[in-house]
Length: 183
Image 1 (tube, helix red, strand yellow):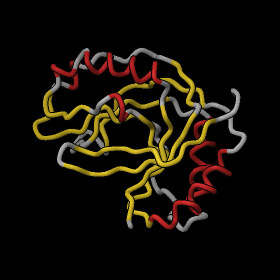
Image 2 (tube, helix red, strand yellow):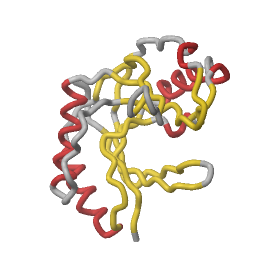
Image 3 (cartoon, rainbow, N blue to C red):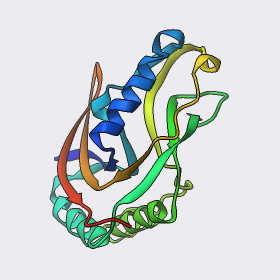
Image 4 (spheres, one colour):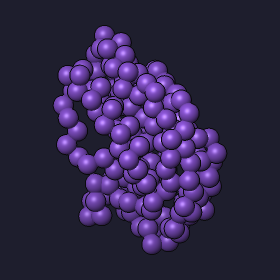
């Protein structure tokens, strides 16, 4: 059976709450966006796509080895961005500060998936949280206030299943890894 998978860095609950309040402060001023629920706020470290269920053990083992002994990742919000770009945007995201520790986490995950037969990610790692998906006549981005420079620690990542449906995607964590200690 094929599972649609990605590897996510999970935000602390208080950070997701603050981000949700931020989005609620302007969501009615911006048109053409389907806003993501707070429960789906995360940073995608690597999208794997459709993967045979039989490969889960190998992928999980190698990710666990890659992040074993890792400390938490300190980050903060670093402004809004449209993906893939401002001309034909599909995603409204809040970028995060990309520290050396964040890059090392991404590199470790990248190495783990390479060991499992996936191709190297060609795009530069740009840590971000998707806050909305652009649908139709997108207007009002200039009405979005700057985000507070909230700092937070990422202490957990996971292998997540994404099931597509008429109301959007539904996420289920299949395996999680907690980091030990701080930086």
